[in-house]
Length: 355
Ligand SMILES: [Zn+2]
Image (tube, rainbow, N blue to C red; front, top):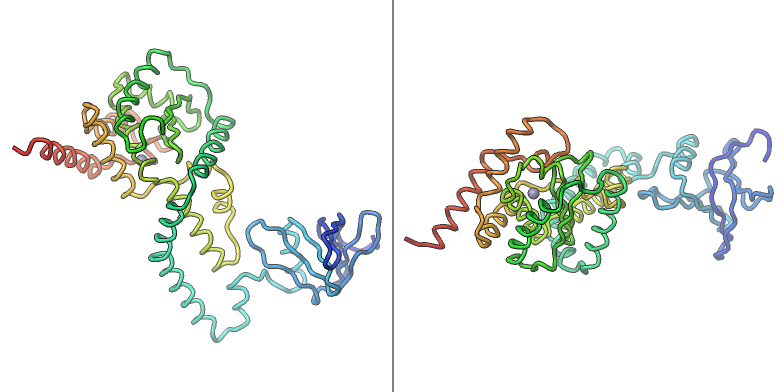
């Protein structure tokens, strides 16, 4: 390397129209960019302004094309952004590209936002439904396996509940699962110590349910209430809420990418890592639908149909308004929600005995 040459980043160089790949460094000296092999051989060289640099899209590797048609490829997005910045070319997101057309900028931006609004309002829900409909069962299965693996490695640990307690909950769970649309074989109930997750119960999209020791502890021996919560979680699975949430998040990330030329780190994490599943909270409508599911399943199994409302009341009293990642932060037991559960119970009761 020439003495005052700066290392931009490392990557691979490909000759023109060849799949051959040579590990190399990209170096810079006052606007002159060179790809140099590890042994010091120059592979390509060009003035910065003649380079064709691909736009940043998430963490997809960046390609820098030299005038001779050869290609340098790297995953070091930050280094390429930096190279562009120091050489006076900004990151080429959609909005950045528009900055050169000042008079029309405002019109463009308004149009883009209007269009995005329309896509979000009308097209996204339809796309999400289509995606859910065509998703083969193996997808939620894989998502769920990787999520549980991640959780077991990071926060969850083996349950410390005794056998009798676990059996009582499992038996009750079997009684409600038998009336579920997917049938009992579609569900597995897992007991874990919650650790940082605390008192909680959640369902993964393939029907894997997890209930934490801490939640069982809070229920204080009232198994029926816990079954009510598990029936609610079955509702989320049957109505494919988490799959919908994931696709909606993916669609949103796509929109953000279109507008800003970049997906934020958190959106990317959400899509790449299964553990992002837990960060998604459901909409109020989804919660209400899962509550009604709980009321139905509990009634069919001969339990107190409003057990889930009872559960919220007791848990709220015990947890107070302590914030954190417990079941109340993802499932706020508002008075309206409890009332809706009781109303639905009354409605079902009337239907069962019309007099
Ligand atoms: Zn819920």
